[in-house]
Image 1 (cartoon, rainbow, N blue to C red):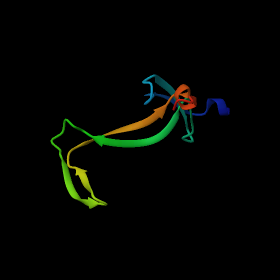
Image 2 (cartoon, rainbow, N blue to C red):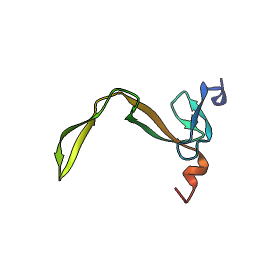
Image 3 (cartoon, helix red, strand yellow):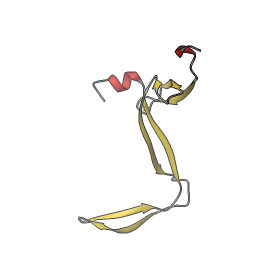
Image 4 (cartoon, helix red, strand yellow):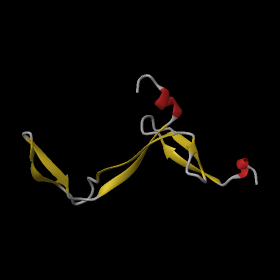
Length: 87
């Protein structure tokens, strides 16, 4: 089996900047081509029964924690947005 035949899979993700669908090839060794990955992040799920609860203060500002569910997202950018001087 040649290197070109090594196991790979294709995944689709949306660019977080422009919304374009990106086709990403992921190889057996977890390297990839076809986009720029910046990691995962979570945001509060406003549809859940959560609220912001004050946990303390820091330098005159409230420190709060979201008590509800969170949504997780992967941050990807397409080549156009990643290379754009406007970003």
